[in-house]
Length: 235
Ligand code: CA
Image: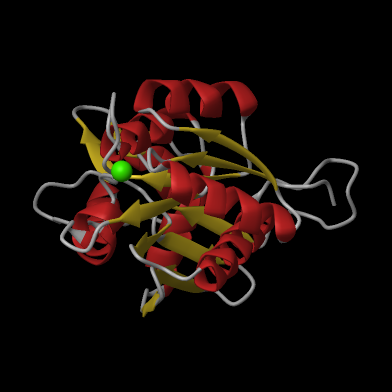
């Protein structure tokens, strides 16, 4: 496997040095920026395999960088945060960070998290057409992980009990992330042509799914209703 590149955006010089030293010793290539704008640009240009991101930064802060990157990149993001910052917000769907560490942390812990995130992201990467591995069996987005083989859904580290059709619907959404899907289309693909339950069935299942995966089910941000058209899964 190629050497993974880890990007670091952190303004504390001594911490950057410690991170680079330890990550390189663990066999990774590192790139670093100490300011928000430069960091965002570096990640877009270099397309690293993982980003270690401090929240409090000069220029644009870590929250905004996270939001910006989540629009068009799927790299794993590990947030570094001071003790008083809100962990809920960090792991919230709005932000889409994959993991976080509270300062001060041990380098051993950090390396372990980096290993885990890269392993997870390698499993969710699309298989190459020439590869023998077959299609990926793990789908991942924000704090949601779907294990297709075991038909299991995790939100963070917590297992989500989903009914069969809820599971199928979620997988269908994952595979068509960002696309507007009509109720008819969803019915055909998830329930099969012969189903005659009507679009209300889709709405009910979307309602149930939202109650399980949305941070605020009353104001959905993951499964968005597109007026007059259907639904769109934002990831
Ligand atoms: Ca900082």
